[in-house]
Image (cartoon, rainbow, N blue to C red; front, side, top):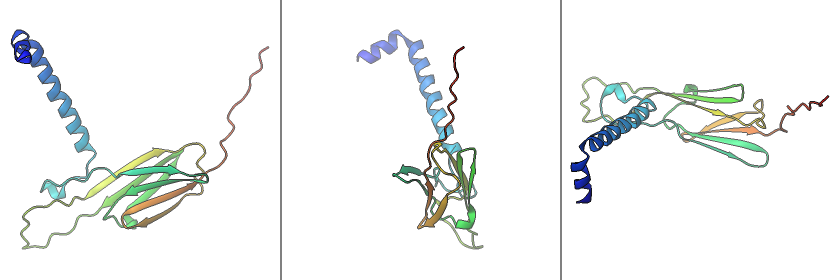
Length: 155
């Protein structure tokens, strides 16, 4: 009741808040859709979000795990440049058999990539990667942090 009275006494505020909610919701919808694999040929409502990542470390190494089910190792690219680890994967579309009648298509295909800025203690010359059951695991040895500090004496 109190909210209805406020809405009646301030219709402009209610309309502005409603427009804000719509714009804010649309912003998140746009962001979410820009991060998704496209659905199969535009059919169906299935969506695959970006590749999920874990970054962990132990005493000796960093461990990156990425979920990329249904992607062959030949369709995965791992690049390193300027302490930036970039993973790219592409799920190829399945060829539809002529004459088959699909009731719905939920499996998605397309390309996705993620980049991680690695710490300076990551020895990016020592990366090893393996793919097992749709999980890509990259191990990166640790090294001593580089000494970048230069002391300046005051005259």
